[in-house]
Image (tube, rainbow, N blue to C red; front, side, top):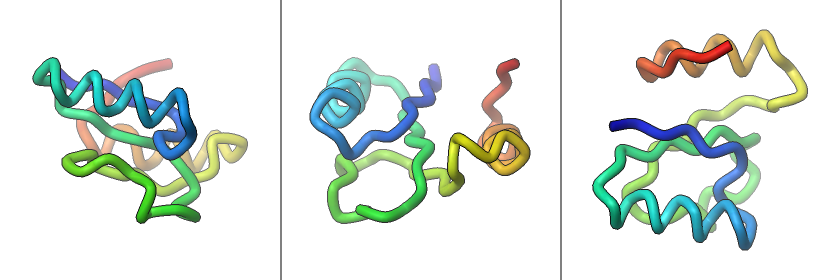
Length: 68
């Protein structure tokens, strides 16, 4: 299964990313790409600003993620 986490480099979202990876999920973080060194190993980073909905909608389907 796949999971999309908004952010992924802060305290909570990083911990959620690690927990999802350890549970066997394929993890995608959607963030602005400002702190790539703070992403958990094994996470796929999608770079877009969540405040730019068109950009966020463009990268999510490219990763096979569907949402509304």
